[in-house]
Amino acid sequence: WNDHVHSGRWERAFELLAATNNLPEITGRLCPALCEYACVLGINDDSVTIRENELAIIEWAFKNGVIKSNPPKRRTKKSVAVVGSGPTGLTVAMQLNQAGHNVTLFERDNKLGGILRYGIPDFKLEKPILDRRLAMMETEGIKLIASQDVGVDYPAAKLREDFTVICLTGGSRAPRDLKITGRDLKGIYFAMEYLTQANLLAGGEKIAAERLIDVRGKKVMVIGGGDTGADCVGTAHRQQAACVVQIELLPQPPECRTSEYPWPRYPLMLKTSSSHEEGGAREWAVLTKKFLGSGGRVQKLSCVRVSFSEKDPQGCPIMRELAESEFEIEADVVILALGFLYPERTPLLSGLGVEFDPRGNVKTDANYMTAAPGVFCAGDMRRGQSLIVWAISEGRRAAHCIDTYLMGSSTLPFF
Image 1 (cartoon, one colour):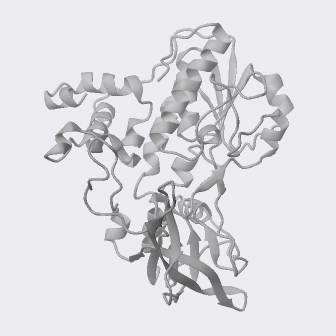
Image 2 (cartoon, rainbow, N blue to C red; image 1 turned 180 degrees about the horizontal axis):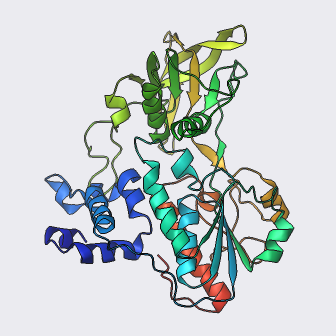
Image 3 (cartoon, rainbow, N blue to C red; image 1 turned 60 degrees about the vertical axis):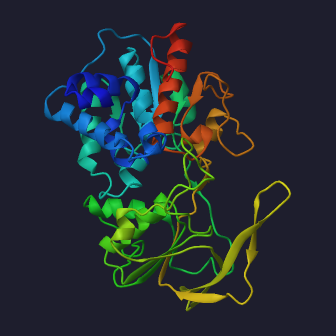
Protein backbone atom coordinates (compact mmCIF):
# COMPACT_ATOMS: atom_id res chain seq x y z
CA TRP A 1 0.00 0.00 0.00
CA ASN A 2 2.97 2.33 0.27
CA ASP A 3 3.45 1.96 -3.48
CA HIS A 4 -0.25 2.60 -4.12
CA VAL A 5 -0.07 5.80 -2.08
CA HIS A 6 2.99 6.84 -4.06
CA SER A 7 1.00 6.26 -7.27
CA GLY A 8 -2.17 7.94 -6.02
CA ARG A 9 -4.24 4.73 -5.92
CA TRP A 10 -5.80 5.47 -2.54
CA GLU A 11 -8.74 3.09 -2.72
CA ARG A 12 -6.51 0.13 -3.58
CA ALA A 13 -4.12 1.19 -0.80
CA PHE A 14 -7.02 1.08 1.65
CA GLU A 15 -8.10 -2.38 0.47
CA LEU A 16 -4.64 -3.78 1.16
CA LEU A 17 -4.32 -1.99 4.49
CA ALA A 18 -7.71 -3.20 5.71
CA ALA A 19 -6.92 -6.76 4.64
CA THR A 20 -4.57 -7.25 7.60
CA ASN A 21 -5.43 -4.45 10.04
CA ASN A 22 -8.83 -3.95 11.65
CA LEU A 23 -7.89 -0.70 13.39
CA PRO A 24 -5.49 1.31 11.19
CA GLU A 25 -6.87 4.60 12.53
CA ILE A 26 -5.60 3.44 15.94
CA THR A 27 -2.24 1.95 14.93
CA GLY A 28 -1.61 4.95 12.70
CA ARG A 29 -1.70 7.08 15.83
CA LEU A 30 -0.27 4.80 18.54
CA CYS A 31 2.03 2.20 16.99
CA PRO A 32 5.75 2.77 17.68
CA ALA A 33 6.35 1.86 14.01
CA LEU A 34 8.95 -0.85 14.49
CA CYS A 35 8.67 -1.53 10.75
CA GLU A 36 10.23 1.84 9.92
CA TYR A 37 13.49 0.83 11.61
CA ALA A 38 13.64 -2.20 9.28
CA CYS A 39 12.90 -0.17 6.13
CA VAL A 40 15.68 -0.81 3.60
CA LEU A 41 15.88 2.90 2.86
CA GLY A 42 17.00 3.38 6.46
CA ILE A 43 20.43 1.97 5.60
CA ASN A 44 21.55 5.29 4.14
CA ASP A 45 18.57 7.66 4.35
CA ASP A 46 15.38 8.38 6.26
CA SER A 47 12.97 5.46 6.33
CA VAL A 48 9.60 5.50 4.57
CA THR A 49 7.04 7.15 6.87
CA ILE A 50 4.96 3.98 7.08
CA ARG A 51 2.83 4.95 10.07
CA GLU A 52 1.99 8.37 8.64
CA ASN A 53 1.07 6.74 5.32
CA GLU A 54 -1.16 4.26 7.14
CA LEU A 55 -2.97 7.04 8.97
CA ALA A 56 -3.37 9.06 5.76
CA ILE A 57 -4.93 6.05 3.98
CA ILE A 58 -7.53 5.27 6.63
CA GLU A 59 -8.52 8.91 7.16
CA TRP A 60 -8.83 9.33 3.37
CA ALA A 61 -11.12 6.28 3.32
CA PHE A 62 -13.37 7.69 6.05
CA LYS A 63 -13.46 11.16 4.49
CA ASN A 64 -14.34 9.85 1.03
CA GLY A 65 -16.98 7.37 2.12
CA VAL A 66 -14.98 4.33 1.10
CA ILE A 67 -15.55 2.74 4.51
CA LYS A 68 -19.16 1.67 4.73
CA SER A 69 -21.19 -0.51 7.07
CA ASN A 70 -20.87 -4.08 5.80
CA PRO A 71 -23.05 -6.51 7.78
CA PRO A 72 -22.54 -10.19 6.95
CA LYS A 73 -24.84 -11.56 4.25
CA ARG A 74 -25.70 -14.63 6.31
CA ARG A 75 -25.88 -15.44 9.99
CA THR A 76 -24.96 -18.67 11.71
CA LYS A 77 -26.78 -19.90 14.79
CA LYS A 78 -23.61 -19.58 16.86
CA SER A 79 -23.31 -16.96 19.60
CA VAL A 80 -20.01 -15.55 20.85
CA ALA A 81 -19.33 -13.52 23.99
CA VAL A 82 -16.19 -11.37 23.80
CA VAL A 83 -15.26 -10.07 27.24
CA GLY A 84 -13.05 -6.99 27.12
CA SER A 85 -13.26 -4.19 24.54
CA GLY A 86 -9.63 -3.21 24.06
CA PRO A 87 -7.95 -3.61 20.67
CA THR A 88 -7.94 -7.43 20.87
CA GLY A 89 -11.60 -7.62 21.82
CA LEU A 90 -12.61 -5.19 19.09
CA THR A 91 -10.69 -7.22 16.52
CA VAL A 92 -12.12 -10.58 17.61
CA ALA A 93 -15.64 -9.14 17.51
CA MET A 94 -15.22 -7.63 14.04
CA GLN A 95 -13.71 -10.77 12.54
CA LEU A 96 -16.27 -13.20 13.99
CA ASN A 97 -19.12 -10.89 13.05
CA GLN A 98 -17.93 -10.94 9.44
CA ALA A 99 -17.98 -14.74 9.63
CA GLY A 100 -21.69 -14.48 10.42
CA HIS A 101 -21.69 -15.32 14.11
CA ASN A 102 -23.82 -13.41 16.60
CA VAL A 103 -21.28 -11.46 18.64
CA THR A 104 -21.80 -9.64 21.93
CA LEU A 105 -18.94 -7.47 23.20
CA PHE A 106 -18.87 -6.85 26.96
CA GLU A 107 -17.03 -4.08 28.83
CA ARG A 108 -17.06 -3.48 32.59
CA ASP A 109 -16.32 0.25 32.32
CA ASN A 110 -18.98 2.83 31.46
CA LYS A 111 -17.89 3.08 27.83
CA LEU A 112 -16.26 0.65 25.42
CA GLY A 113 -12.67 0.82 24.27
CA GLY A 114 -10.70 -0.56 27.21
CA ILE A 115 -7.19 0.84 27.39
CA LEU A 116 -7.77 2.81 24.18
CA ARG A 117 -10.37 4.91 25.97
CA TYR A 118 -9.14 4.96 29.54
CA GLY A 119 -5.39 4.38 29.27
CA ILE A 120 -4.42 6.52 26.25
CA PRO A 121 -4.61 10.32 26.70
CA ASP A 122 -6.69 12.41 24.32
CA PHE A 123 -3.58 14.17 23.01
CA LYS A 124 -2.56 10.82 21.49
CA LEU A 125 -5.99 9.41 20.65
CA GLU A 126 -9.07 11.61 20.57
CA LYS A 127 -12.02 9.52 21.66
CA PRO A 128 -14.35 10.44 18.72
CA ILE A 129 -11.93 8.39 16.59
CA LEU A 130 -12.76 5.37 18.73
CA ASP A 131 -16.49 6.18 18.82
CA ARG A 132 -16.55 6.33 15.02
CA ARG A 133 -15.33 2.73 14.81
CA LEU A 134 -17.66 1.50 17.56
CA ALA A 135 -20.67 3.05 15.81
CA MET A 136 -19.77 1.19 12.62
CA MET A 137 -19.40 -2.08 14.51
CA GLU A 138 -22.88 -1.61 15.95
CA THR A 139 -24.45 -0.96 12.54
CA GLU A 140 -22.81 -4.17 11.32
CA GLY A 141 -24.69 -6.16 13.93
CA ILE A 142 -22.31 -6.45 16.88
CA LYS A 143 -24.07 -6.04 20.22
CA LEU A 144 -22.12 -3.66 22.47
CA ILE A 145 -22.71 -3.84 26.22
CA ALA A 146 -20.88 -1.50 28.64
CA SER A 147 -21.05 -1.26 32.47
CA GLN A 148 -21.28 -5.05 32.71
CA ASP A 149 -18.69 -6.67 34.96
CA VAL A 150 -18.91 -10.18 33.58
CA GLY A 151 -18.30 -12.69 36.33
CA VAL A 152 -19.88 -10.36 38.90
CA ASP A 153 -22.96 -8.71 37.34
CA TYR A 154 -23.23 -11.56 34.86
CA PRO A 155 -22.22 -14.88 36.47
CA ALA A 156 -19.77 -17.10 34.61
CA ALA A 157 -22.19 -20.04 34.70
CA LYS A 158 -24.93 -18.03 33.00
CA LEU A 159 -22.45 -16.76 30.39
CA ARG A 160 -21.65 -20.36 29.48
CA GLU A 161 -25.36 -21.15 29.17
CA ASP A 162 -26.14 -18.11 27.02
CA PHE A 163 -23.27 -18.34 24.51
CA THR A 164 -21.81 -21.06 22.32
CA VAL A 165 -18.25 -19.87 22.98
CA ILE A 166 -16.51 -17.22 25.07
CA CYS A 167 -13.38 -15.25 24.23
CA LEU A 168 -11.50 -13.51 27.05
CA THR A 169 -9.68 -10.34 26.01
CA GLY A 170 -9.41 -8.49 29.32
CA GLY A 171 -5.78 -7.46 28.98
CA SER A 172 -2.95 -7.50 31.51
CA ARG A 173 -3.99 -5.03 34.16
CA ALA A 174 -2.25 -6.10 37.38
CA PRO A 175 0.39 -3.32 37.80
CA ARG A 176 4.00 -3.89 38.83
CA ASP A 177 4.51 -2.31 42.24
CA LEU A 178 7.54 -0.76 43.94
CA LYS A 179 7.50 -2.33 47.40
CA ILE A 180 9.98 -0.20 49.27
CA THR A 181 9.93 1.71 52.54
CA GLY A 182 7.26 4.41 52.53
CA ARG A 183 5.07 2.79 49.86
CA ASP A 184 2.04 3.18 52.14
CA LEU A 185 2.30 6.99 52.13
CA LYS A 186 -0.54 8.88 50.48
CA GLY A 187 0.13 10.55 47.14
CA ILE A 188 1.60 7.48 45.42
CA TYR A 189 -0.46 6.07 42.54
CA PHE A 190 -0.24 3.54 39.74
CA ALA A 191 -0.05 5.02 36.25
CA MET A 192 -3.32 3.44 35.12
CA GLU A 193 -5.13 4.93 38.14
CA TYR A 194 -3.91 8.36 37.11
CA LEU A 195 -4.46 8.03 33.36
CA THR A 196 -7.92 6.48 33.74
CA GLN A 197 -9.03 9.29 36.00
CA ALA A 198 -7.58 11.90 33.66
CA ASN A 199 -9.51 10.40 30.74
CA LEU A 200 -12.71 10.34 32.77
CA LEU A 201 -12.25 14.01 33.61
CA ALA A 202 -11.49 14.86 29.97
CA GLY A 203 -14.71 13.06 29.02
CA GLY A 204 -16.74 15.25 31.36
CA GLU A 205 -17.22 12.74 34.17
CA LYS A 206 -17.05 13.79 37.80
CA ILE A 207 -14.57 12.37 40.33
CA ALA A 208 -15.33 12.46 44.04
CA ALA A 209 -13.04 14.86 45.90
CA GLU A 210 -11.62 12.13 48.14
CA ARG A 211 -10.62 10.06 45.06
CA LEU A 212 -9.31 12.92 42.92
CA ILE A 213 -5.62 12.76 41.95
CA ASP A 214 -4.95 16.49 41.86
CA VAL A 215 -1.53 17.50 40.48
CA ARG A 216 -2.27 21.17 39.82
CA GLY A 217 0.58 23.26 41.22
CA LYS A 218 2.34 20.19 42.62
CA LYS A 219 5.70 18.52 42.11
CA VAL A 220 5.08 15.32 40.16
CA MET A 221 7.49 12.39 39.98
CA VAL A 222 6.97 9.68 37.36
CA ILE A 223 8.91 6.46 37.96
CA GLY A 224 9.32 4.51 34.72
CA GLY A 225 10.77 5.65 31.41
CA GLY A 226 8.44 3.92 28.95
CA ASP A 227 5.53 5.14 26.84
CA THR A 228 3.08 4.93 29.76
CA GLY A 229 5.39 7.11 31.83
CA ALA A 230 5.59 9.60 28.98
CA ASP A 231 1.78 9.68 28.81
CA CYS A 232 1.73 10.52 32.52
CA VAL A 233 4.24 13.32 31.94
CA GLY A 234 2.11 14.85 29.16
CA THR A 235 -1.05 14.54 31.23
CA ALA A 236 0.58 16.22 34.24
CA HIS A 237 1.65 19.12 32.01
CA ARG A 238 -1.94 19.58 30.87
CA GLN A 239 -3.19 19.47 34.44
CA GLN A 240 -0.78 22.31 35.27
CA ALA A 241 1.65 20.55 37.57
CA ALA A 242 4.30 22.86 39.01
CA CYS A 243 7.07 20.60 37.70
CA VAL A 244 7.42 17.06 36.36
CA VAL A 245 10.41 14.73 36.65
CA GLN A 246 10.59 11.28 35.06
CA ILE A 247 13.20 8.79 36.29
CA GLU A 248 14.32 5.51 34.73
CA LEU A 249 16.39 2.71 36.25
CA LEU A 250 18.29 1.93 33.03
CA PRO A 251 20.98 4.19 31.53
CA GLN A 252 20.11 6.72 28.84
CA PRO A 253 20.06 5.06 25.39
CA PRO A 254 22.06 6.54 22.49
CA GLU A 255 20.34 9.04 20.20
CA CYS A 256 21.40 7.19 17.02
CA ARG A 257 21.61 3.55 15.94
CA THR A 258 24.83 1.94 17.17
CA SER A 259 26.88 -0.98 15.84
CA GLU A 260 25.23 -3.20 18.48
CA TYR A 261 21.94 -2.83 16.61
CA PRO A 262 22.69 -3.00 12.87
CA TRP A 263 19.92 -2.73 10.30
CA PRO A 264 17.32 -4.32 10.20
CA ARG A 265 17.31 -4.95 13.97
CA TYR A 266 15.12 -2.72 16.10
CA PRO A 267 17.61 -0.36 17.75
CA LEU A 268 17.72 0.67 21.37
CA MET A 269 17.54 4.45 20.96
CA LEU A 270 16.45 7.46 22.97
CA LYS A 271 12.75 8.16 22.46
CA THR A 272 11.62 11.73 22.95
CA SER A 273 7.86 12.14 22.71
CA SER A 274 5.79 15.31 22.50
CA SER A 275 5.28 15.00 26.27
CA HIS A 276 9.02 15.44 26.85
CA GLU A 277 9.23 18.29 24.36
CA GLU A 278 6.58 20.14 26.37
CA GLY A 279 8.79 20.34 29.45
CA GLY A 280 9.90 18.52 32.54
CA ALA A 281 13.14 16.71 33.29
CA ARG A 282 14.38 13.15 32.77
CA GLU A 283 16.88 11.33 34.94
CA TRP A 284 18.53 8.05 33.93
CA ALA A 285 20.19 5.20 35.86
CA VAL A 286 18.37 6.11 39.06
CA LEU A 287 17.23 3.59 41.66
CA THR A 288 14.51 4.64 44.11
CA LYS A 289 15.42 3.33 47.55
CA LYS A 290 12.54 4.65 49.67
CA PHE A 291 9.73 7.16 49.90
CA LEU A 292 9.95 9.83 52.58
CA GLY A 293 7.07 11.82 53.99
CA SER A 294 5.35 13.56 56.85
CA GLY A 295 1.80 13.43 58.15
CA GLY A 296 1.17 10.29 56.14
CA ARG A 297 1.89 11.93 52.76
CA VAL A 298 4.86 11.53 50.46
CA GLN A 299 7.27 14.47 50.26
CA LYS A 300 10.53 13.11 48.88
CA LEU A 301 12.20 10.17 47.16
CA SER A 302 15.51 8.83 48.40
CA CYS A 303 17.48 7.69 45.35
CA VAL A 304 20.91 6.48 44.28
CA ARG A 305 22.76 6.44 40.96
CA VAL A 306 23.48 3.03 39.44
CA SER A 307 25.78 1.59 36.80
CA PHE A 308 25.36 -1.36 34.43
CA SER A 309 28.94 -1.41 33.13
CA GLU A 310 29.73 -4.89 34.52
CA LYS A 311 28.37 -8.14 33.10
CA ASP A 312 27.84 -11.63 34.48
CA PRO A 313 29.31 -14.79 32.83
CA GLN A 314 26.24 -14.99 30.56
CA GLY A 315 26.83 -11.45 29.32
CA CYS A 316 23.90 -9.89 31.16
CA PRO A 317 24.48 -6.45 32.73
CA ILE A 318 24.86 -6.30 36.51
CA MET A 319 23.40 -3.31 38.36
CA ARG A 320 25.76 -1.68 40.85
CA GLU A 321 24.95 1.24 43.13
CA LEU A 322 27.52 4.02 42.80
CA ALA A 323 29.24 4.97 46.04
CA GLU A 324 28.34 8.35 47.53
CA SER A 325 25.74 9.02 44.84
CA GLU A 326 22.71 9.17 47.14
CA PHE A 327 20.34 12.09 46.64
CA GLU A 328 16.75 13.14 47.34
CA ILE A 329 14.04 14.54 45.06
CA GLU A 330 11.02 16.43 46.34
CA ALA A 331 7.64 15.12 45.20
CA ASP A 332 4.04 15.84 46.16
CA VAL A 333 2.67 13.17 43.82
CA VAL A 334 4.42 9.98 42.69
CA ILE A 335 3.17 7.94 39.71
CA LEU A 336 4.41 4.38 39.24
CA ALA A 337 4.66 3.55 35.52
CA LEU A 338 6.50 0.25 35.87
CA GLY A 339 4.48 -1.92 33.51
CA PHE A 340 2.09 -4.79 34.21
CA LEU A 341 2.52 -8.32 35.50
CA TYR A 342 -0.46 -10.43 34.41
CA PRO A 343 -4.29 -10.37 34.20
CA GLU A 344 -6.27 -9.34 37.22
CA ARG A 345 -7.58 -12.35 39.14
CA THR A 346 -11.29 -11.75 38.61
CA PRO A 347 -14.33 -13.87 39.56
CA LEU A 348 -14.81 -14.51 35.83
CA LEU A 349 -11.49 -16.32 35.46
CA SER A 350 -12.04 -18.45 38.55
CA GLY A 351 -15.67 -19.07 37.60
CA LEU A 352 -14.74 -20.33 34.15
CA GLY A 353 -11.97 -22.54 35.53
CA VAL A 354 -9.12 -21.32 33.32
CA GLU A 355 -5.50 -22.18 34.13
CA PHE A 356 -2.45 -19.91 34.23
CA ASP A 357 1.03 -20.28 32.78
CA PRO A 358 4.25 -19.79 34.83
CA ARG A 359 4.16 -16.04 34.12
CA GLY A 360 0.62 -15.72 35.46
CA ASN A 361 -1.08 -15.25 32.11
CA VAL A 362 -4.12 -17.26 31.02
CA LYS A 363 -2.88 -20.53 29.57
CA THR A 364 -4.11 -21.64 26.14
CA ASP A 365 -3.27 -24.29 23.58
CA ALA A 366 -2.04 -23.54 20.05
CA ASN A 367 -5.63 -22.78 19.02
CA TYR A 368 -6.15 -20.12 21.71
CA MET A 369 -8.45 -22.35 23.78
CA THR A 370 -8.05 -22.35 27.55
CA ALA A 371 -8.31 -25.36 29.85
CA ALA A 372 -12.08 -24.75 29.85
CA PRO A 373 -13.61 -26.18 26.63
CA GLY A 374 -15.23 -23.53 24.47
CA VAL A 375 -13.46 -20.71 26.35
CA PHE A 376 -10.77 -18.91 24.35
CA CYS A 377 -8.33 -16.17 25.30
CA ALA A 378 -6.27 -13.68 23.29
CA GLY A 379 -4.18 -10.53 23.61
CA ASP A 380 -2.25 -9.34 26.64
CA MET A 381 -4.30 -11.60 28.89
CA ARG A 382 -2.76 -14.57 27.08
CA ARG A 383 0.73 -13.43 26.04
CA GLY A 384 1.49 -10.65 28.49
CA GLN A 385 1.71 -6.89 28.06
CA SER A 386 2.68 -6.00 24.51
CA LEU A 387 2.08 -3.63 21.58
CA ILE A 388 -1.20 -2.77 19.91
CA VAL A 389 -0.08 -4.50 16.70
CA TRP A 390 0.27 -7.72 18.70
CA ALA A 391 -3.19 -7.14 20.19
CA ILE A 392 -4.73 -6.92 16.72
CA SER A 393 -2.75 -9.91 15.46
CA GLU A 394 -3.84 -11.96 18.47
CA GLY A 395 -7.46 -11.02 17.84
CA ARG A 396 -7.34 -12.07 14.20
CA ARG A 397 -5.65 -15.39 14.98
CA ALA A 398 -8.06 -16.16 17.82
CA ALA A 399 -11.05 -15.35 15.62
CA HIS A 400 -9.81 -17.82 12.99
CA CYS A 401 -9.46 -20.53 15.64
CA ILE A 402 -12.88 -19.82 17.15
CA ASP A 403 -14.54 -19.88 13.72
CA THR A 404 -12.83 -23.20 12.97
CA TYR A 405 -14.01 -24.59 16.32
CA LEU A 406 -17.58 -23.52 15.57
CA MET A 407 -17.80 -24.46 11.89
CA GLY A 408 -15.12 -27.10 11.32
CA SER A 409 -13.15 -24.78 9.02
CA SER A 410 -12.68 -21.06 8.50
CA THR A 411 -12.23 -18.58 5.69
CA LEU A 412 -10.97 -15.95 8.15
CA PRO A 413 -7.25 -15.26 7.71
CA PHE A 414 -4.87 -16.56 10.35
CA PHE A 415 -2.83 -13.34 10.46
